[in-house]
Image 1 (tube, rainbow, N blue to C red):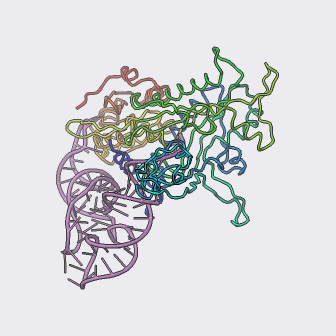
Image 2 (cartoon, protein in one colour):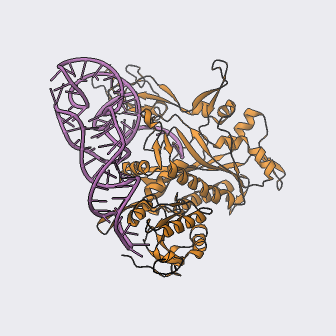
Image 3 (spheres, rainbow, N blue to C red):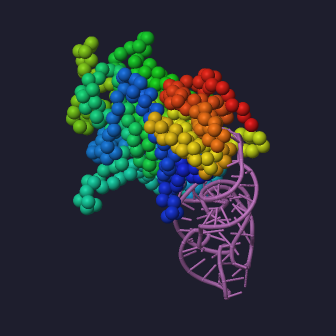
Length: 494
RNA sequence: GCGGGAAUAGCUCAGCGGUAGAGCGCCAGCCUUCCAAGCUGGGGGUCGCGGGUUCGAAUCCCGUUUCCCGCUCCA
């Protein structure tokens, strides 16, 4: 499948628009439309529910995007979050200058006839004394001098730029957690192990953004710092390592819980060279996007690096008193760090289906009901009958108090179903003549409506009075359609 | 930043020097008793932007912006 199909659907159906489109757009910035904001909010909501409300050991936090500049000095971002890049003038390839020194290079020496040597990293050529200035890929092109790519957005606090204090838009939400470690610990009276969760925007001057909302300069993270006592031992193993593995499993399972197919998920372990400066071990949850396997979430063991750095820089003690051992310890932090926008994209891509129904293409999003922007659409089978329309509007109004729902009467029923399919609405309620009765013939209605399920297109006949009960089971309690639907008579599919 | 591709209606695209088009979608009306039905009508585009060539440019040339695909980085 092509990502363009998703991009197009997202625009057409109000999920995601390009930012500043009327001005020609701006690179890698995207706006969430009316349905997109529902979907993204739902992703964040289930993440928060599963990780904060349903866990006794995790609490929430919402730190400011702007922080004291020293935070970034302490965290290492100011020094490490820049990459020196060099370009080959001949083959146009780009390299990180610091990584070039890790391997030997092929040197075409002008001082000798056969002029080709493998020279170890950092060593000058014994013939001409040249150090690496030639491209390691093509061996011909000269490399440009290294240029610094600062990945943090610099900004100014204060109305007059020259006098203002330089600060940065946070490149990760994690530091907001670390600098509040003691505040949260004291105010919430926590005992290790415990976690602090946060959802929020982060900003990075990515060298190469792209792939729709996958890699953008402005993005939203869903992060937990789970603090563990490094002196604890679980089953004979260091507690931080055990908890790290538990979180890897938990986070890997989480995506599947909301509908992502197992076959399109994998775990990938970072090797030594790839590990961030703060990490002891990191595993990524990857999803097979249309453009290939890419990272959804990184689960890192950041050890005590951050808390120690902030303690050192700020002069404040960031420790936990271990009652059992009567000693102060600096906890280790296990960090499951997920991309909210990436998750949205994965859920969209994975839910997208094209089916053939009676010779026609049916496009649908098989979104998990918890994620679907609209839970219920209430539709009149005939819009010319005032009683039907009035009843449908009334039902929709009542359902709207509990679930996001819409009313639509602007097309024939088949088209209305297809519209809802395309935005992933799991259930449609249809009001017909039998519901309200035919007054002219002196018939009274049966006060029953049809519920149609998105994926199977199955239909059941349900009393209006039981609608809220049925939807509570389906949408709130998560009881499967097959169970709930079996209680009611199926109506014939034409 | 480099290389390649692209930019025309909401979407997908045709038109490639001579009055801006199609399909789908959208809106309204008629019709219609459950899966993108039919009929009629309608709205909607200074052809990404700026310059040039030309009697005449969506079309040719130059520039520019943005998007997409690669390279490098990450959530």
